[in-house]
Length: 257
Image (cartoon, rainbow, N blue to C red):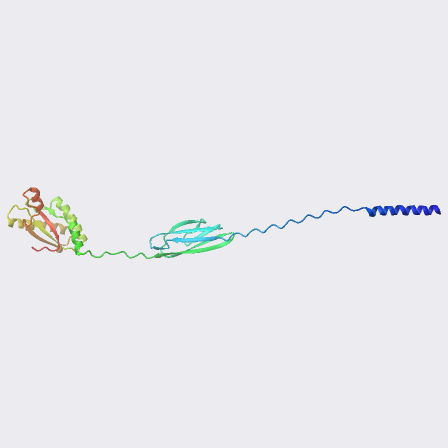
């Protein structure tokens, strides 16, 4: 009986020691969980396109040209209407529209769309200035500047080659100035009688008139008169001087003796 109690006591003692040993054992502490990384920032929204458009000069006459200048930012597609189409993000171009036009620039990009416009005014060209008729003084100046004398051989009224060239040029002037009437004076050198030279001067004036009429100058614009040897251009008794006096001389208007 005593041995049995001792055995039970020993067993309880061993069990208590075991429980005490187990109760005194500590578990190691757990490591804290790592902190979650902060969230990534949201990407910035793409920029809205910006646009600039200018026309210089802003007013032109029909048939003239103007220059269009433009610039954009944040654009992937740029277009100018009307009539120009797709363009680079920045640049210039020359236009010459027939009528006034409003040009519109449209720029598109990831950030959206932007537009602007510029007006080009096309004014009607002024009517051509029609010069008025020249004054009498101006007509006289043109006549004296462009109409030349025709010269003749001694005792002849035939139109020689150099006189033909002169009369051709005179005819062109008279046909361009149809309002001008004129007189052809027949002149001679001092040799021969007064009566003979008056007749020779008349033949020379009439020969020059007929030449001009054949070239298309109206006969009713032309008057003739003979001065014979009465009004010499040169008074020296030399062949050179006599040649200057043998002529058909032109004066604007109607000459009266």
